[in-house]
Length: 525
Image (cartoon, rainbow, N blue to C red; front, side, top):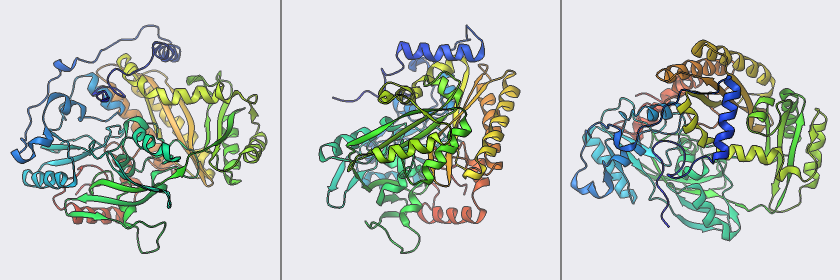
């Protein structure tokens, strides 16, 4: 059966959304958070009422079969899934719609599109699942634009069970990869929150972070080799388990965010599907106590598959606890052997820092399961909350353990002040860990504010700017796994060394001499 179309406004596919019970839960939390019973409500315009600018380009006859300027295609490829994308969609503002959406079937099609774009001096935007939350797929002030949707590059071409790897095309969505690998007892084991609506090529291009909290956290860990079509030619790196032969060409394209070429194929390292699982949830008297327990577990070399902590307010917001305690969601899994010893040692580390485990067996119905359900379903909430002028967004970072508590305190203070200054009322700030390493955690912040229709983007910008300034000034990274895009560029420019920026520009100039690909992302030319 054909899948439903992806929404042009909101998360997921047409017909999908929050259940009435989930929507009522989110509404109740917003009412409680802001002390408001009735919100000013604005509904998004119907598709037929949205005005689109006239296309500035027309595909030549020899590309007409893979190009479209139809209304839905242009709407669905205008934005990603960030908060400001949702606001502009709510307002019916699709002025940034691409002129042409192309659906190449093979590498020759991509090469032909790049030739046409060079002649037309048109920007070219690579597009996977469109789940970017940082302005990675939007054309901003670029002139004529061609968005290239990779959905037909959707096959697992070859599986090498001996080396435990697979050759996979870049446009395939996460669930389809796992469906093909499952009968072989294999998994890629990379599950970002956007798993259902994002592609392998997108994961590689944005250095995606998966659901698993330790050890193999980023897509980098799974890439064995790449095949990339660039405006200067096609290249393929050699399949190797490791190499000391100079700088890795793979690493140049991992995280390149579409500015250097199209990732059409990748050999990806696989793992055996897990057979053994153990875990649950623990309560802690404070967020910092829970953080110290995470550090103890990671530095003991236990590497749980899940070791996330939620501060008391975050635990309450997701229904994982009552708001009086911090929560740790702890899990182990393995394909080869039972996990009793590792779980027992992790619980011992947690108890050393005040952790109290839920009753045995409760991890299928307790705090861990309630958090997991909220984590998977929460992206659907934005299209509802933005209609109530609620500003709910997230940002994440990574920091060494010695600087974590200082960064956390500074970021929370700066963001809370910015919310009050921007909206005239207090908001809410929460934090959890998504990933953790022996040398530091990846704190993930959420903020909630009650804004005003007509001013939401300005209010969001003020809050986001204050939070991002605080992250950089405290020594963190502007993003741990959400990529740079256009939204994070000002802080990425401050984070990276200037000489490296020059080197990146030189690489782009060599691979993309007309500067066609994703202008405004990572570097300006």
